[in-house]
Amino acid sequence: MLSKLAASSNPVEVIRELVLRTGGFWQDTVEASGLFEIQLAGITGLGSSAQAAVEDWVIQARRTKVEDLWVALEEG
Image 1 (cartoon, rainbow, N blue to C red):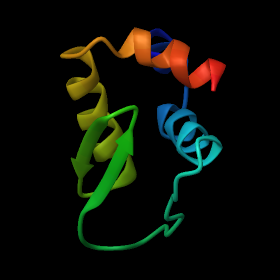
Image 2: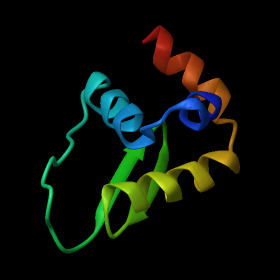
Image 3: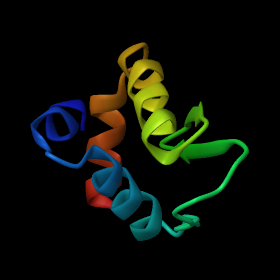
């Protein structure tokens, strides 16, 4: 999963697609203030925008066995 994100020109869209495909909710508001939270594969990313939350999610994912979780998401 991390390699797919690193190779993508738009990692936010990659995470968005995964969240929606796995039954999650994605707020597509362009201009909003507050906290953006991503919960995917048991990992939470937080930030002031979708981009910041994806960056935080990647940091948290690197600390876990996210590649194993990617296989589970792809099979599910």
